[in-house]
Image (tube, rainbow, N blue to C red):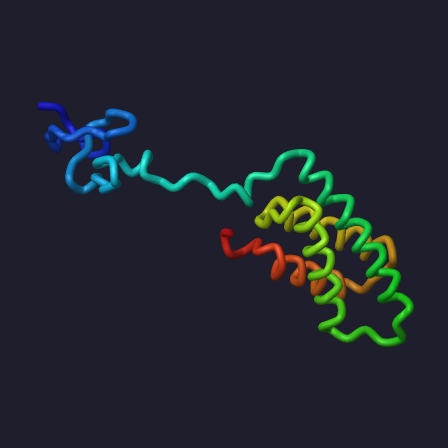
Amino acid sequence: MPECSFHSGVETEVSCMECGRYICPKDMVPTPVGYKCPICAKPAPSQYILVKPKQAAGAAVLAILAAYGGGLLLIVMPIHFLFITAAWGALVGEAARRGSGGHRGPIIAGIAGVAVVAVGLLLGFWLLDIVLGVIGVMLVTGWGWGR
């Protein structure tokens, strides 16, 4: 009798409907087409996390433009409030998201975050302003939430 592909020594007659691996009752994942192994039953990655090079380029262009334009506005303002620099980061994150066609996740957040840091350093912002801008980016792009 065949053994489970994931637990050695456990005999089974059931195999995955997709790949054909033998699976024991602990590993069976019920699906509409039958039982699948845990590997084949994983959901496909979201289409809004996979970013193509053209979409990444669009995100980078809009993020840099938004970061520079917003940074110049922050320089003109007489007083920086903490929420204003976070809003600047959120604006850059939203520009990157729209430039990529609506994508979220670590790639878009990274592009927007690099734009905030680079423009912030270029324009001479304080470190706290840059950090708050990156936090604003993370809030908009969903970096820490696995979207």
